[in-house]
Length: 446
Image 1 (cartoon, rainbow, N blue to C red):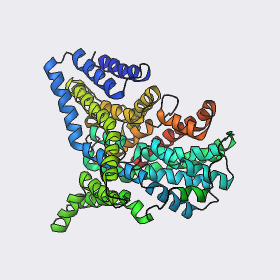
Image 2 (cartoon, rainbow, N blue to C red; image 1 turned 60 degrees about the vertical axis):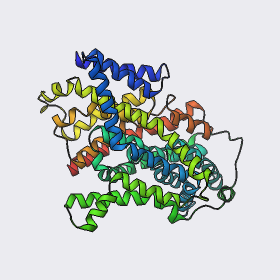
Image 3 (cartoon, one colour; image 1 turned 60 degrees about the horizontal axis):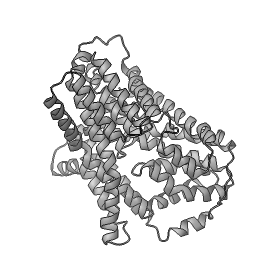
Image 4 (tube, helix red, strand yellow; image 1 turned 135 degrees about the vertical axis):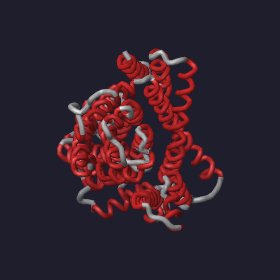
């Protein structure tokens, strides 16, 4: 009966979001209330558990999400994202424009939401396609899949952070970032291959040919240096990585204590925000208040969805489902790498049904958290690979109920049927190759 109640609760979330277009935050709250009340939990306890779950997840990762969003907003508004793109173009060369677009997307979407990343880089995509004389659809898919890979797999993007928090892996963000960066490579590669082999056959009637490449770069005015542009991304990753190494080897001393402190995700992201502030053209109300205010507005829905997911997860645990699962003998069921298929399938079903990758990451991680102790899944690498499996499912597939699908479709000029062939199939391939690679990493590393 508990599992039937949970299934109905999840179905309620999906229907409310996909059919009635209710915001995922309210859908999650409704689902949480239903599961708590229908399971026979005392009403006062339902409220208490909701508050506890919401506050607990916010205490662990709330500030990390906020600071990551601030960094992304500053990179977007100062032209630093374009500077990073220009650097990648110089390294890769003009003869491989789709590869350049994939790599640009891979880098930019680590701190910047994939929707915003595509909009920011749209003029550059069109100009480069014009200069290289390649199909616009091919360039669009290459950029979109590069953005999509790191968006779903690499912190400080909110989705992977929320998933890590829900399964109790917020202390292993360094490992999750490293494994996420590695796992996102095959996802980006398969997107690039699909862009070259399939999307290049799609013709787009382009009304506005746009500016030349050089004109696009000049239109952004004076952009920051390459070092200053990359620093807000690289610095937090390096600090978190150093902190993880110090903790792993149990090094002591004043220097180790300092870097362990700076390696905490919150402090590392604060350092990233400080580095990003050096990109600001002026220190005035426009940049220090309005730009930061915009970042906080962008972070708010993610925080609410993440908090509601934490409340949902806590209610699930308190219903007794976790105790039931832990009493099972799962030795003959899916174990090891095979277990990763469970979160993958759940996340893929949720993503396909309701459209939001972040919501799929949040809900799936809440659902599978009780399973992990039973399966003996603990520690940095196993939990990081569980996050990768959820991220893989949250890719498959992007279609008409996903805002990113429409961003790619509208800005690229593709017809919907062509976008299904190009973008939707590409995200399906990304999801499949990512879960297979995560399973391979499990065999090798665990």
